Amino acid sequence: MSTVPGYVRAAGAAGSSAVCRGKRRREPGASERGARLATETASAAEELAQLREAMASRPVIDQARGMVMAMVPCPAEAAWEVLVETSQHTNTKLRDIASRLVATTEGRRLPPEVEKAMAAAFRRHRPDRGW
Figure 1 (cartoon, rainbow, N blue to C red):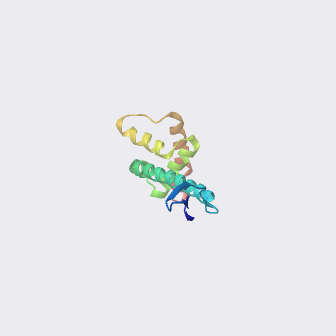
Figure 2 (cartoon, one colour; figure 1 turned 60 degrees about the horizontal axis):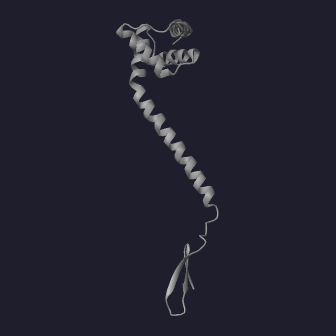
């Protein structure tokens, strides 16, 4: 009798052989490796989706940063801080704040809570504070 992974070969009386399904042997730790691989794959897929979203929203965020720099002459880092603070204080995604700010060039108004938070961020990042 010979063993083939997952099968047992048994010789018959007339010299013929039959293949029977045998118990499949599992490698030790295979289920743990499979679970780890599934977790890593899901994590990589989530990271890829986030990176794609970030790349798609980057241009509008850069436009909004430029608008802030033009409204209140300031360095790019200060403009970034204004946008981030506005996002945090309104519990709104940064890309949404940026989109709303860029939309003001088409005659749309900022929502009142965004306008208020942005004005407060401008005050906290005034040029007289040493940009």
